[in-house]
Image (cartoon, rainbow, N blue to C red; front, side):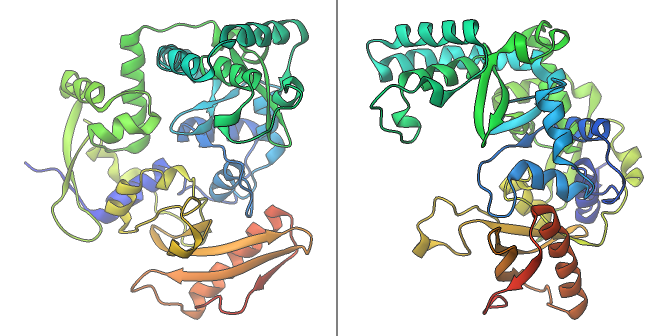
Length: 396
């Protein structure tokens, strides 16, 4: 018997797994925020603040009572969250720290020789000096260690001590104690991550099982490649071996794609089909998503499930951009209906809408534009600006 899941059911389930089906106005406590991040798995961090920083917008799009100070407290006071890498820099529950120890070891093996060759002589001395300084003096910013006369630049031009700070962070000796104007503050792990988290150890087998099981739980259904890509902790071969080893717990599900064509074979836990009716419909309102939203992080999966092709064009030369530098996807109910180019002008107190693109077969009806305006009003308040300004030509 073929287990076929319709595209509408697949979208509904995935949106619920992504925290986008819960009531967006339900009061979110600090404990509730920690639960939300745990259920998502990670929230990507990015410095760009075209409207709002990515991590704040990701959380706001799921619950509009989200408070930034709760995230700061969980990260910098409670030690309930920590920053490290998935596919990119992300905020993660500290309960996952024991699993990240395997990533630290993998990172150490992968980068120490490369960085030694890259930095040349004096590599070890600068690293020892940096480590001793943090042990002795405590939390520190990279700029406090900057050598006289060093010219700043990208990662390729980091001064040796900045390289050391990043190395010790990437390999789990240092942790991010906080941020100052978005610059990382580094300190020893044991002074940042509570002992109940940083002292735990798990075997490699336990680590692989957790990485696959937790990824599939958050995805609902997935190929072994999607399982591996969720955390970016394992290779596709490791995920494939895990699937083979746990076939007795899994079923094969055929997922109907959004734009027709052959259904995609995926894996799910054995009780998955029995629970499909328990997932609610997503709210009908329009929501603006961050370009780094975890729901659209896997661009190929997004295209299959939603028929929506999205690429961020930050690194595309301006004449070659199809849309714009930092364009936000629009979610309406369970459909990705278009994208919008806008920027918060905090000096003028405005949210400037430059351009709206709706997908084919999505009509700019009066009701839909009213819903968009209501969402932009909510987002403007969250970003700390007073009014929305639709610039000339915003409708194309």
